[in-house]
Length: 262
Length: 258
Image 1 (cartoon, chains in turn purple, orange):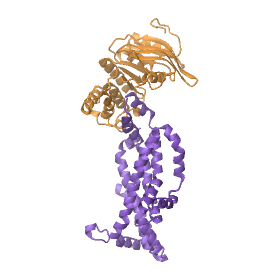
Image 2: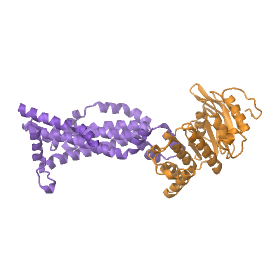
Image 3: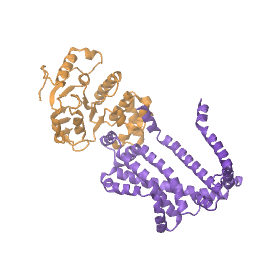
Image 4: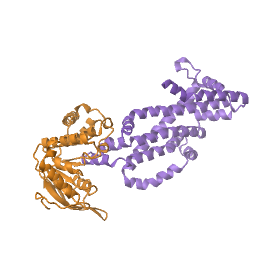
């Protein structure tokens, strides 16, 4: 039954591919290479290297290495800053009174607009790219952490008061675990935003990476290369999200189960 | 042990407690019963130091409650919001014991002993959401026991469980409170329960709450769910409390007016 259900879910993918293949072959437009050509080109670009490098070509290392490093560095940085600041703001009504308007103002600024500014400010492209990513994705983490910290069940907090938990215990044993589901929701949203901002930052302040590759391919009329980049970015986003969900399911097992039973 | 004198509390202009005085001697189990919404929970929260009452005084062991006392434990009605769902039963029970200066090993032992007392020795590694409501409330009680408070407050502790579980928990509370000689203030809206569990029953009036009556139960130490509830004394007292809760005046001679 499970096999049938699984097949039932994915059958649309090969069907779409086949229709696309037929349509693009018939149309013979340079802008729309057939998926088979795109796949072949992707293999050629990235997966025709020596077996000792897991078939990865030098170009694959040049494209994926810097991009993935920036993606994870930016995301990790935003996570650390966002969660720490979010907990502080969520715990202090005074702090949030001062900062709430600023946060909502900062969140409203479209981050790509700031790339030229960051580039002018930081000169080097990598710090400017990282800053762009962090600035763009920190908001969902920050806001969700603030919300999660603020909405800890009153009885959970009262229990902590009754039993005289220290500030550290209250924070690490009660507030943070209770806020975890919302923090994770923020982190997941931030991860998908990070991929978008990474590409924007690499296109606008490029020096290597997938976004830069995408831009060069487009400028040199290598549309099959460009399509290869688009496909691989889609796959990357899908994989990152799946990996994150897998981790979330392990860390927040209590939350999923508690919600199912009550 | 516990002295509540002329306790007054208002939320804004809405007066909830209107001069409530209750005393509990060392080791006594006092039930406070009253109509729903009469301010019972406000009373408990004032005694626990969770809110600062508008007026009056609460002394525990002769000391005024100006912040949350360190020798007090609370069992709330809503166990699912009082236990931490991200911790196992054993960790829920053991966590407050850090304050007692016990090391990890000792905390663990004390938690296991308390869980054993409430009949949950096998469920130590279970999470709250893996347990029935009655089991979760037992964990709450175990947490309070392990903490070794001199005053135990219970806020409608059996209000969210089924009838059979309720009876089991009532007997459990009677047993462990007697065993530890804990002074206990149990708040309930259930007339039958207040008479069955209490050494004394304090009846509150409709909001704003005053003490309508303070009745000694006098059913002796050992109680039995079936036999005790058949005793004439039980039936009479239950009727008496029932009339008082409904706002009628007392006809009995055991009444001590405050």
